[in-house]
Length: 310
Ligand SMILES: C[S@@+](CC[C@H](N)C(=O)[O-])C[C@H]1O[C@@H](n2cnc3c(N)ncnc32)[C@H](O)[C@@H]1O
Image (cartoon, rainbow, N blue to C red; front, side):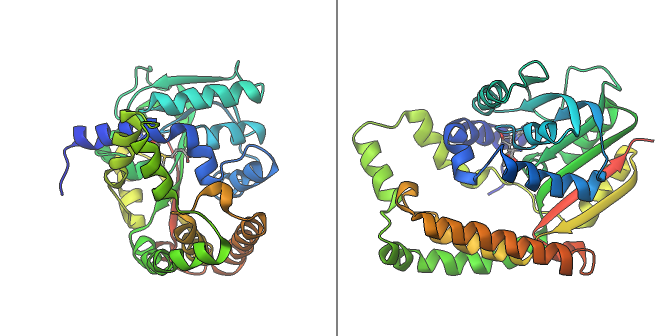
């Protein structure tokens, strides 16, 4: 099915508004030591260990995973978090207040193709798992370029690679087929059954039901490394660097996520969660130390890009 740019944006608004409240729990988003170290791994790879930016703009900030952890890590001083979903931005505001960052974090409801900011307003434009949702990427990269001061940088992470995404389908499919057995073995109830009961009992709003029904429409791209560097170079960026990260960690992660996907989260035993989390960290370390930088970027699941505005 080919969707127009407006249909893609509408699906993104409906789904992410509906998903906002449960988003951090679903994706294990954390603002403590774990979240900070996971984000530091990413920024160190692309921006370097001593990176520091005064005024930053996050595109598609979601609930604030990257911004709030980069702020805690001292990488950014002030940030404007932007998103097409107001539901997500409400979550950023709540978390920023809880972390004591309300005076340094502002939110702005907008889509990624046009911002009402003057040229050269920011030192860093960044995002995580956002580019693959954007209908017109060249227009967005041109806009990122316009918004940056000379010497400013872009940093995007968590973008699915075309080949990595294809390979990851196998662990996903195997996990999906084994999930009924897994639920039975661990005595985990079925989430879709509980959801159907909640809908029948009128406990779910129409927005929630409609939003979740369009989840399959929100991802529009998977990239070759050259696609991402091409958009950046065409916009005028220099020092363009595309890196691949996470290979075995993603196979392991997607297999477990597919097993768990239709399980009631509260039923999943603590010991299983520990195994899944510690296993993921172990594979992530293996990828980082043994594979990344040795194998071509295109084979990894996630792509990251950094570049400089001359
Ligand atoms: C996969 S989520 C990632 C959120 C967050 N960056 C994270 O890593 O947790 C993608 C986010 O991009 C937002 N988004 C989707 N399309 C957008 C667009 N055209 N302009 C701005 N934000 C958009 C969604 O609302 C959602 O919050």
